[in-house]
Length: 267
Ligand SMILES: C[S@@+](CC[C@H](N)C(=O)[O-])C[C@H]1O[C@@H](n2cnc3c(N)ncnc32)[C@H](O)[C@@H]1O
Image 1 (tube, helix red, strand yellow):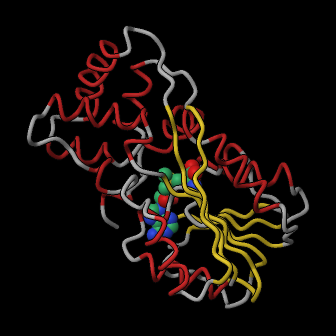
Image 2: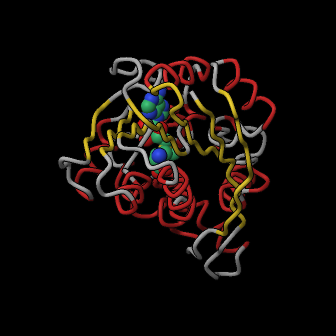
């Protein structure tokens, strides 16, 4: 696994307690509602992380069986603490590029904010289509452009101010780098999905202090690995980014524009 996709160590807890409430909850509720609208009995979730979509979906469809998978067991361990496995919820480690399920196993497949991390997206889409029953629906969300995601943009700009000409580029390079509707549609159709729909979904982040914004990004995502390897460590950079952001936000909690891209396709 590349360090870009390594949600490991202390990352999952900070991710789930600070980053998720700040930026992910509204999208998770919407995506879960979209999945539930077709009334699936069996749902596969890939890149489920700490289970924010799983929990929302389970609230709406308590009788559906949800198999929630992720590459990183540490994320699923955190998910299992919040919503323990049961008859309806199964947490299972799995690479979305190599799913350990027979073909035509699920009525629906959902994935939120994980596809950008896949090193081979066409393979991920081919696997999704393979395990879906014919007529089953893929529902997914990825981030829109960084310029329309103001919290993460502010962190990236702080890093660029702190390290002119040599700033860490993970934020620009991975999570916010898969937002072209034409490319998304092309990849889905190439994998054999039909009736593809794509739309932008916009919210605002929950008002959050400069320190928590800095902590969530520098210590609650794989950016922590890049900071540890080349920039003096996530703890020190959290302090520096906090200072830059606090000055920029005038010491007030910050709430910014968030933009996601939701898309669906029929297997
Ligand atoms: C930003 S998190 C999103 C997690 C969750 N869906 C959410 O909305 O909070 C990205 C997730 O993708 C997972 N991931 C990255 N590459 C993966 C792969 N090849 N297969 C499965 N999961 C992967 C990571 O482990 C991480 O949990």
